[in-house]
Length: 144
Image 1 (cartoon, rainbow, N blue to C red):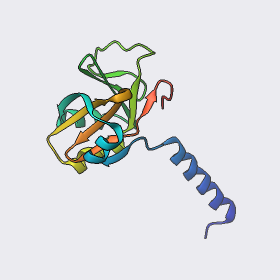
Image 2 (image 1 turned 180 degrees about the horizontal axis):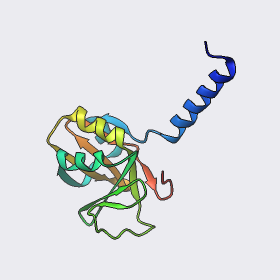
Image 3 (image 1 turned 120 degrees about the vertical axis):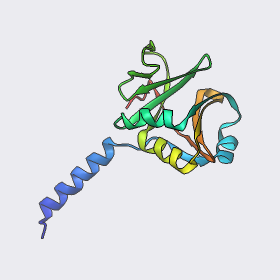
Image 4 (image 1 turned 90 degrees about the vertical axis):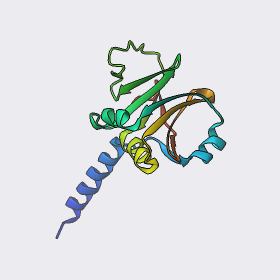
């Protein structure tokens, strides 16, 4: 039987772990996302397998940006992972999502192609099938 101090310690550790692993992103149906975030201004379509390759190699967060019709992907430390040699300025704003939420969106949509979409107010959505991910945080200023 666990004593009271051990119980509190386990709760504290569990809370601190869950706090450091914040889930970033919320899944919507494609129709809900269109209603909430407006029309798509620009879209970059990629093979889901291409995107999955980058997700597997990351720990917790991944960041996206569409600039001049090009897709840029950064890891959680703001290092370029696609294109690998991209030059990223500290003031370049990306949308950060939890790896787990991107994976969930891809697996729920279950399509071979994924769309990275730019909407009004520089909102980035990730759509696969009928599943759309949004609620990414801006980095900067809120980098994980």
